[in-house]
Structures are given as C-alpha cells and as structure tokens.
Image (cartoon, rainbow, N blue to C red; front, side, top):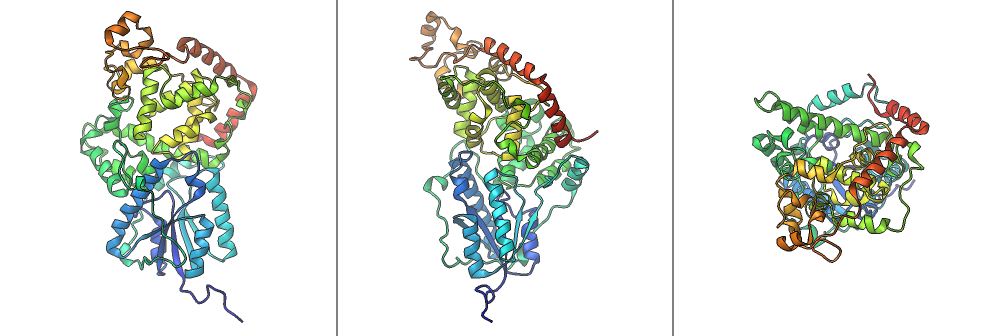
Length: 496
C-alpha cells in the first residue's frame, strides 16, 4: 500500500503565535517543547486581517517589532519564528506537506468574527488531516461560558497560579526556511520606529512594567484621568497586553509583589481593578461576539440615530479632530500621532460621537480601533457600546468636553500640545475659543471660523446634550430595553 506524502516525514510540533507574542508564561510553547518533537514556531500575516479596517500600519509595525524581539531572544537557543504572509490554511498545508504536523499548539483567541471563522476552518482542516490542535486558555477568559457562575474565583485562581516558563534550552527548534515558502519581508515603514508611538516586544514591555514600579506609577490613581499626565503615570502596558508581549498573570503577580510597599496601595488597588476589567470585558465579547455588528441590547435596534445628509461631514470632523471643541480635537489628533489616550478621554470621544452628534456607534468603532495601538476586539466593542449607552445596564454618561478640559487639563498643556493653532490662547479662553470677539481674535492673532485657524463648533453643545439626555433616558425606560437588560445581567454579570 503506497504511503501518504506525510508518512515519510519526521513529525513536528507547531506553535502558532497569534496575540501571544512572548516566550514567557506561554503554555502552548512549553507543551510543544515537552512533546520531545522538533518545534517549529509560526506567525502568519493574514490578508483577512491586513486588509481589515480595524487595523492600520501601526498595529503591524508593533507586531513586526515584537517578532524581531522574539527572534533575538530565540537566537541563543537556535530558534526562530517563521513569518509568512498568506492565508492560514495555505501556510499550514505547506508546512504539513514538508514536515508532517503532529500537533498544533496555540492560545485561544477572542478576536473578530473573521478570525473566529478562520479558527473554525483551521479546526476542520486539522481534523481532516488527523492533527491534534491543542488550544490553551488565554488569561481567565473561558470559552463557551454562558454565565458568570464561579467566574471571579476562577479568575483569582488563574492569576495566582504559577506562570508557565518554557524551557527553551530543552527545545529542538527548526529554524531552516521551509521549501516552497517565502519568508515575509515587511515594508520599510514597519522597520523603523515612529516617534511618540510605543515600540513592540517583550523586552520593552518588561522595561515599561519595571519603570512603573520604579516611581512613575505611584501617582497612578491621582493622574489616571489627566490627558497629559496620564501618559507618564499610567502603566502604559495596554498595547503589550493586547498583543501578548506580557500576560495578564505576569503583570498581576508583579503587582502583588509590590502590594505592601508604603504609599502605593491606592494606586495599586486602582490598577488591580483594571486587570479584572480586562478579562471581564473580553469575556463579554467571547460570550456574545455578535456585538461586533449589533447592539448587545436588542431593545436599541430601532434607536433613532441621525440619518440626515450632514452625517458624513460631522463624522469627518470628529475623525480628523476638527469639531471645534478643543479637548475632543486634541484627543483625536493625539491618537493619530501616538496611538494612545487615557480611558476617560476615550470615553469622551465616544460620548461626543454617539451622544452629542447622535451618530451610530458602528460608524466610528473601526476608526478608533485603527488608531488605538492597544486595540483588543473584546475590550473595544464591549466598552464602545457601554460608552455609547446602548447596553441598558450601565450608567448613562454624557461627557461635556469643555468641563472635562477645565477639570483635567486646567493649564491647557494637552490642548496646546496637540492644537498648536490655539497655543497663543491662555486658559480659560482656550477652552471655548468660539466665544472670542473679533477684537480678541485680533489681539491673540487667531481667527475662528470656516476659513480661519480653528473651526467653530460643529454643534451647539448645551442643546445637543439636553436632546441626548432626553433621548437616552426615555429609551432606557422602554420595556424591550429592560427585558434585554435582565438577559444581559444574567449572562454577563457575576451573581451575588
């Protein structure tokens, strides 16, 4: 009986990296090494993601930087991550033809519907080729969970469990270029750092983590809402967690090691709660991923978003940072340049889009995803809908951008940094530049208006706020919204 093409090949263990770009606390990698078979490491730049509107070049540059860092760490052990650009099934098929994959190892991924469908195809392909696909849980996110019964205890158990340390010295890595596969060469723009944008990789992730505890994080609880100061005093770990340069367990256990340091308890308590939220929101998306396309609360399906002809113009003003409201515009321009703003400012951007402009959240969700360097699908969609006030279970928060600026950027340092055209305007004038008289505009050498240095407001804030408040509260009281709210609480909220 003739042998199959793979029967004469030596069997291997294949580790498929996705959003877990690290060599520490990596159960799939350790399991592959423990198999005793030669280990091949793989990352696939897939067209379905490269061409997706949620992502932009900043994400792929960060991934590439992370892969380069991994390869530097692997070099002393004779290892290397094979990086290709292709469909996932195509890459796996090529490797299986040459090497005979015995087991595929990876972490579970709570991604977009596209990657979920891709994983289903991979599962089917593995079954057809008699390949054992071992998927390991990511953090405390439980696949297939239909309620939160026991979720908190499971989270705590997972986060306090020993980290999984792969024994790289014991690995028999395959680092030769497979036949019939072309290794990916990134565009030149991926290979150079961008000023103001965080650089990817576990090495810098750990440096960022350590620098937090070396001093800059002590004021975390007091600076977290400040758009300028949060850039230094917040942990700045979010992109490293989103792309898996660090695991949540690693950063949580590092926090516990500093728990009793005098003067840090308030900041560490605030940070600890955010690690809980991290898994909580991803779990919501994992349990109800349809929220990528629809309101999680179906009672809002007929919500009266605008349908007038000015939507496109107002949406463009919001996207470009030209709304006429300084803090809104400074935040958007900061995002374009750096990929980061703090949580409160993100909430304000969504509130302005969905509350004041009354534009469907689905019109802006991909734009912000493409700008957030730390874009994490599960957190992004759950948070976006919460801030858009279409869950029916969360407090309605309508952020006044002028008051936010006065309270959290009182000296206008953040606004002046990102809106240089307003740099001559001191506070409080800079918070409401549209109130300047023609004489004052001449005095400060600035013109406000369509043909001027800075635009007039695209809406009247007080009027828009009142209409939004009435609209949102009246809908939250609807029977269909309340009915859905009960369902959501049953599925996504931890029982008492």
